Image 1 (cartoon, helix red, strand yellow):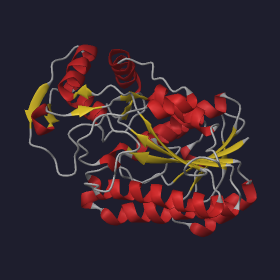
Image 2 (cartoon, one colour):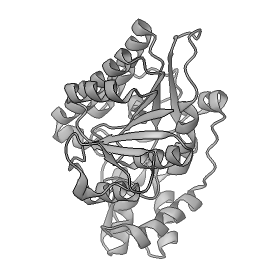
Image 3 (cartoon, one colour):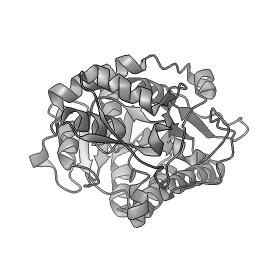
Length: 340
């Protein structure tokens, strides 16, 4: 089976590519390696999968020096002509679209980047999947679509009509676009609403690396809403196990919504932010300096995944405790993180 993964210089895409390659699949990865955060981390991830920075050029497929069945290309999802040619020549079986302009707060500062990548880019993916009769499209949605939903845990049946950031709005739009293509063209499509993924090789704009860096440097960490926040922190290995199982679980043509499904993918155990900070302090062996701040625009007070539908569909069961996950993250941070 040949699988196309977008976003393989990113956090989740990098880990998924490694997992699928270890399982014996042929993988083609794509990323535009933008500078939303330090590109050195993205190039370091690519190096881990055998892709040398010096060989990368726009539109150039590069074979991995580590994995016989892996090739990588730098390109933009907005580049419709390139994507159409790539799909036509490679004849993928399944597609996992993880590439997107990420970040809730950044969407307030740079909204056009989100429309270009998350809307135009996703439209191109849908069209290429339709024209090339892709067996199954899996795409990244987000827990942010739930907005200020007061019903917890968040369930797929809950209404998600009131996003509180443009990033969330683009993810909800992706779900609607995918549903339309599933209905019109019988394109099997599965959306995954990710809940606060963390672990080794994570994004430096997210809390774990921000906290670890500040704590080890003796600088204050920013604690928003005075610490009164909870997140459904989910360790990366549990996420990848779930995505891998979903890849093989094609939506039922006889379901209530034929060829279409949405799943929450999280830990289903929200952790108070202050508990997360204390766990990281313990793993680092250093006390944090706290800078208490008000709620940030676009933030959610709590994320909490009801993952019962995913468990029923593919036997998804996260197995990593917070202490174990933070411990593994800190071990990687102290020994491997190039920016620490």
